Amino acid sequence: MRNTTRLKSLIQAPELLVMPGAYDALSAMLIEDAGFDAVQCSGFGIAASHLGLPDIGILGFREMLDRTRVICGAVSVPVMADGDTGFGDAATTWHVVREFEAAGAAGINLEDQVIPKRCGHFTGKAVIDAGKMAGKIHAACDARRDPDFVINARTDALQPLGVDEAIRRGNLYAEAGATLVFVDGIETREEVRRVIGEINAPVSINMVEGGRTPLFTFAELQDLGAARVSAPVTTILAAMQGVRGALAAMKRDARPASEPERLAGFDEIKARVGAPHFDDLGQRFGPSKEVGS
Image 1 (cartoon, rainbow, N blue to C red):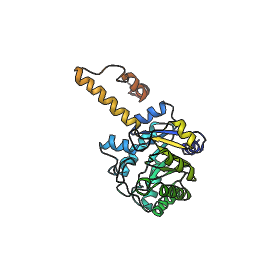
Image 2 (image 1 turned 90 degrees about the vertical axis):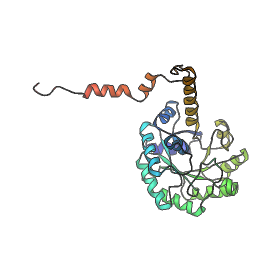
Image 3 (image 1 turned 60 degrees about the horizontal axis):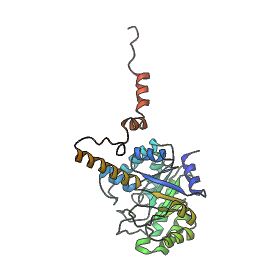
Image 4 (image 1 turned 45 degrees about the vertical axis):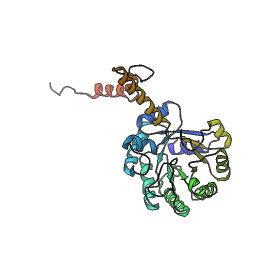
């Protein structure tokens, strides 16, 4: 089964699809190793890890595309790309979708913020006209070569315009062809209930540790009827905490931080990134004797 079809089937299945966010190849591999069925490219995580900057529209299309291509190549499970605003108008959105699909993504997030965009859990967000966003979704659907390539339409209208407008936009985007609708920045259980109950499409919820949305259990989201939940920053927050702790121990103790609870084993990471495989290739295809020698 193609990864596009796998992802679409997982979204349409009765069970909640949980998609942690990856910011590089190794974090994506660890998500797959942990048993998750799909990976979400984290725009926040990629901006932070690649540039050391916040998710406020500074990360460019080509930078995001290149990182997504690497992530897709590192895992066998479906990967959802982060297409931000489509990096422009409907025409650029068409090109962006075509490029992310060619890079190996099984789907893409597209949002209705103005440019430059902001992380969905930041303040100061503004949105474009809903009709213009519907045009971007039409363009995205036209651009995909595989009809199962997932279009995840995100609206950030809740904070500036209220839940009624967010629901209206969600239904408009579904009518325009979105596979999935994502209302970002939800702040209450009642908003979750209304969004899921009143949008006529599968609905995605976003869980950001320390963000605006309350942290529901996956069982609660399943009972509320959510189709998908993304956890975009869990991996990068865990990495930041782990690296910071190991470096603090090294600084304090004036020696390498060798405690097994702080560090994975060097042999472990060598194995996970395929070093033995490349050693074998070197043995099989390394220098050979010249003919006649």
